[in-house]
Length: 431
Ligand SMILES: Cc1ncc(COP(=O)(O)O)c(C=O)c1O
Image (cartoon, rainbow, N blue to C red):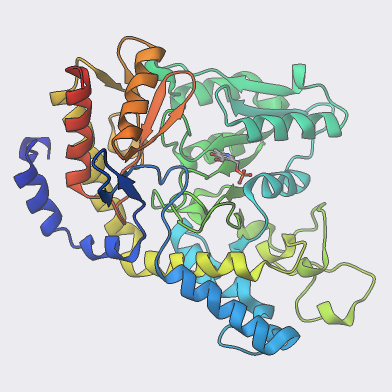
């Protein structure tokens, strides 16, 4: 594939013109950038790994629910095009398709951090012999804080019950062999393995099926934080055998700041009597409104719900998932591979003296994101980052020294990657 790339606007423009997904860009609001001359143009937005862009149809969808509320009041739970009573079910099938799960294995609720805790209530059951949780050393702070607090909550000491797997590869990535070694060494003490689908700082994608098989071989439960994987990589959660997974919807799922998160619970736990924190919305739907004192969970992931869902927050997710349904994860991944491959090729062939890609080069070990280090150290990195932002090229910075650039196949173009490369080149020549 790289042989066919060219670092010219003609090439990038022609590639964009024949992109079968090109029309989707028009369905998104591209934030404007004001140039030095005061003129507005589309920014080059590479930050879908942090906050995805707003689908244009969101406003109407949210307004429709506001209208129903105004016109129907409480009756909106039962009337309207999509009655609120069952609203979370309207997003279920599309979500299940995106994460490769059965519809009853997924639920939209809360936020990622809350869902992580709720899942650990059920799936982290430490004993004196098996008290530990395995995470990766560079894990996202929420995951670290959450597991540490759960360990303490159960009366154990993180000093001995939190096992942090150090990266074993240059650039801070982690091999499957390292996970295997950690499990061989500590497996009999590990209650839960919690790893990311895509690592937030390096952009490394993990092999969920292989990790699950390893964890289960050692008698551990296995869960995944899919914040950076959902809507980015095609996932096969059911087939992976993972016990649970959690994610947020504001990154590649484009559902808005603080959007409702999601959770996956494998089918084999659907009927299991597991400890859990309960609320009325998790109660069996068929008898929920009998308002009985005893909690009988709805079988499947729905049984972990606590509260009736936030309709105004679910409306954007519904719109966004409908876009994913039309685009299809397979086609999105195909474009993503080419788009991120082009960005990588530009960096490696045009900017090798300035930038270094941290993210693994193998396609199966990454998603859309490239994590990029600037040669010359952190201060130069900060300088380039500020220059890019100033020129309307939006990525994000992760300490200590990484710029994350994530071409999103729904709205980014090959020409965007070229604009990025040309800006870096200009900066390196003194701006
Ligand atoms: C990998 C990862 N885990 C957890 C979180 C926290 O998510 P939330 O604030 O929605 O709980 C984030 C947020 O960006 C994240 O990137």
